[in-house]
Image (cartoon, rainbow, N blue to C red):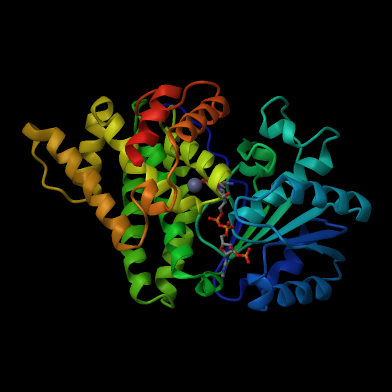
Amino acid sequence: MFDFTYYTPTKVIFGKDTEEQVGQLVKEQGASKVLIHYGSGSVVRSGLLDRVKASLEEAGVPYVELGGVVPNPRLSKVYEGIELCRKEGVDFILAVGGGSVIDSAKAIGYGITNDFDVWDLYEHTRKTDKCAPIGVILTMAATGSEMSNSSVITKEEGALKRSYGHDASRPKFAILNPELTKTLPEYQTMCGCTDILMHTLERYFTQDGNSDMTDAIAEGLLKTVMKHALILKEDPDNYKSRAEVMWAGSLSHNGLTGCGTKSTDFVTHGLEHELGGMYDVAHGAGLSAIWGSWARYVMEDCMYRFFKFAVDVMEIDADPFNMYGVAIDGIEALERFFKKIGMPTSLKELGVEPTDEEIRELAHKAAVACGGKKGSAKVLYEEDFAKIFEMAR
Ligand code: NZQ
Ligand code: ZN
């Protein structure tokens, strides 16, 4: 078990009707003017936005609003938000939505506290430790951005989807009311469950040490999400299952399931980000379309972890004389689960059929984004990325 720092400054307020506390929570943060940031309309239709405004008004906190964030959130909306916040003297950003809205809020938060082009951060040509304070009312259990240090933004020009991470962007509070996720279409619920599984697996498949404690948390989280995803497929209004998945989502990406290991993998995420940038696919679906190909490509270099995953998570019979067979059975079992919840396990099923040239472009962009190499289960390079995209066709 390696040394680690575990930093989760986000105050979590979990349960029914918790969004009613938002005015008070923002006030406690000392906000003088708030930007309410949201997406393409789900929070308007559900009435949540009106309830949020009422709570802020009751607490006497002035606000302005900016909606229109789309999945794979765009840089142009971030610039619009920065301009609005500067003009209005906003000093606190309240994200009401899913990961895309939270990430856009974080980018605006960087933008209003720094005097350079915020895209420089996402291009990794600059760094900062300054971000305006962010609060979250989460409407979709998926990315864990409500507790994470990262933000992923897409620049329209060049279709570049890039991430930047710093602890300064970790939200001050996250309001998690599982009931708010009941209006999600089934596809988005399942994309979210897939993303939560993937955040955990990206930390699980590593060669750089592990910890019994962390493994137990990760394996429990994976089993919990798979169990409740299947329940939600039949019974989308099931509060307990919505709640289990929502809490798992936050824990999957706040660092907890990486404690004690030296590095994380995140190749599947790196490859998905290029798919999201070029084809605007839903993040969770892009991940499941790639994962099996990545797993088969790297498993021999990380055999013990794939064997353990198969036995301890997917409940395949342990046969130490056939580690390869057991590991493959584990990969296939997770792919069967993805199919059961309606998630794609190939690019074709995702609805994307890249040409050979596009595969080279995807691989090249992924390599540029990670500085040439990435991975902990196995360190991979541009030519490996291309082969995985090829296998995923
Ligand atoms: O825009 P609205 O109208 O709200 O609709 C959204 C959107 O169309 C809808 N939705 C959300 N909550 C809803 C709802 N519809 C009905 N009822 C509700 N309660 O769902 C659609 C998808 O929303 P989005 O926010 O895009 O989904 P998600 O939370 O999966 O976020 C995906 C983005 O986050 C990034 C992804 O790459 C992608 O860009 N990620 C961010 C991470 C982070 N910051 O830590 C980590 C992740 O690995 C990920 O990369
Ligand atoms: Zn993700």
